[in-house]
Length: 389
Image (cartoon, rainbow, N blue to C red; front, side, top):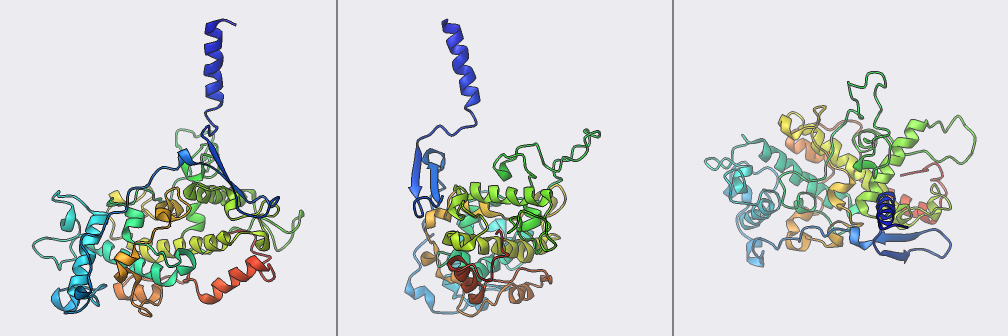
């Protein structure tokens, strides 16, 4: 074989293998042998997330007493129960997380008019106030997903005005120039949102907004039945969401499911219960905290169809099974846990800001719900119809 032929053969092989992960694989057995719950990953593909910044300055005990922020300052609607020093600490931290820098449009000026700090004239202040309420709600009412680790603004923003990973409703790949073929509905156009599979590229509008759609693809029978009618389109869309979750967490399907039966809760890992609540938490965030701000956001903070950018699993996880590798920032910012018993879910919080809460809003996870899913993983009785997330 000539040198030229060998080079051509190597080039062809490299092209054929571009779809494969060539790095060193790491195998981890996460269940009993033979149960199909192994995790195989290429550690070289897991990028390092931005380093967690230290607090702007220490928050010591002396700062926890004194005049309240809503007495010292005007128009403090959310964190007014903090002491003035706690409030100042919170503002310094949020600035560092969302609008760092010395530019005229960054720092405090990103949300405030420096000539009148109490003014709500900048939309960013209105949004930031609502996002603080959202953070308190997550840490208080969604421990079924975030546990005691919780979240802060940094979890999603990581030093950016807008989180890098976000989504808005898409037109499903419609191209007016393709009049003979019509709307492809996102198919046959590999997309990052669904792991570059040729699936509908927007599974989020169906499952991660205020609607009540759930994934119910797997049936207990091979035959059609009156109580289980799922179209091929529904199946493709739900699989697209599963691909999104897999890529967002940097895991494969067996991180939650057992391949003997993707449907069976009693064969699933505990992570499936956590993911179950994660999907519902994201719905709550998008429906009760982001979508009601549609009229507040300017056009450049909205998608092609006019809805504001929203969150999905990738927004927080960023390729890691646990956001920030499981590190909790709350010990340094205890006020973001929210006062015990003070946050009673999105209805109470929405009333504070005047935002409407629709009848389809996803309710926060309750202890009874959590016990039900925990019981279902141990014993599928009563949850056999929950064939998916």
